[in-house]
Structure formats: C-alpha cells, structure tokens
Image (cartoon, rainbow, N blue to C red; front, side):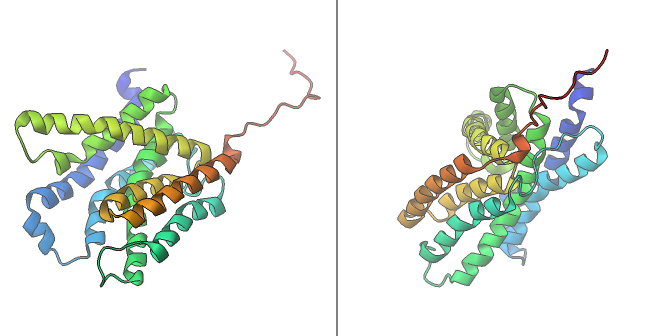
Length: 254
C-alpha cells in the first residue's frame, strides 16, 4: 500500500479543512476593516473560520466511511461526566468571574459560552474527533507532533503577516511545539474518556485565558484543573475496556 493510499482520507480531510477556513482567515487578517464591517456577531463570524475542520471531518467520514476508524464520540463513555466536565468550571466563571467590562452582563457571558462551545467544537470535531482516531496506529510522539503541526499550519495568516520572511516562516514552526504539547494533553484526556466535549472544554479554556486575562480567571482555572484531574482519574471509560476471555470457553477446533 502506497503512502497516498494509506493516508488519502487524512490528506483529503486536511486539504478540505484548509480550503474551508483559509479564505475566512485571509479575510479577517488581511482585509480587517472589511471583516469588522460585516454586520454579524463576532461569534458567528468566528464560526465561519473554526468550522472548517469540523465540516471537513463530517464530509471525509462520509466519503471514506469504509476506511474510517471511529472510537471518539460527542459524549464519549459518559454524557453526565462530559456535561460536568464542561459545565462546572463554566458555571464557576459565570458566577464568580471577572468579565473585564462593567456593562457585560451575565446573560451576555452565558451566550458567549454557548458560542465558544460551538466554534471550538468546530475545530475539535476535526483534530480530536477525526484526526486522532486516524493516527492512533502511530507512536504517541509522532501522532501528537503531526496533529500539532497540522493544527498550527491550519491557522494560515494568524502568525504570518508581520516581520521579515524568516520571521514569518519561523513563527509558525515555533508554535508547533506548544500545539503538539497541547495535542498530547487534549489527546490523552480524550483517549481516556472518548469524549469530544473534554477536548472542547480544554480548548475553550485555553481561549478564555487570553480573552479574560485577570486574577479571577486564573484562580477559577487553577481550581478547574484540580477538578478535571479528579474527573479524569475517576472516569471509567467503558469503551477502553476489552472483554475478558471466558475461562470456560473451549478452544476452537483446527
């Protein structure tokens, strides 16, 4: 089997994800005034960009359905635990967080949380929901390095519009390192739970730390990390368990 035959679904997925997202990245980062003048809520506009990987994963899974491996689902092995994993830290931020602006209401933040879940889901359906399963046969370091690299380079114009040519090339390459590390954390947590919601939670909080960069956010995040660790330790992923062989079963005849 050739390289292309073995990885054609992944190649198709990634090319399509970039094709769907890159025009919006370019519009946002190059023609910023035009993008800002678009009379839509920023959350809706962000979804245009972030759902490239998700839509690509859905289309690729349909086109190559006979060859796609699928172990990761929306709620994984526990819908209740997935909801807690997302909901408890978000409720803590909703009630105790520092929104940064006095005129920002709790209702607006609640709507924002719905939006951030939606557009983060658009990414995670691709990176963890699809790509991780397809690369599970690789050694972990290679799997997460590939996912981290593809994740970073998908961002296109985000880090390539300023500085010298060398800086524009070097900057994305440097970001591959932290993205690969995050892919490891997200990925191993998803392997434990089989839940895309877990990856969405981590990814959303990664964004929140930049969006609401203040002491209360850091305190809530620190407490949430302890909560997440507890949840992951206690999470019994039934999908990870293999049935034990029946000791009384007779061996098959040859």
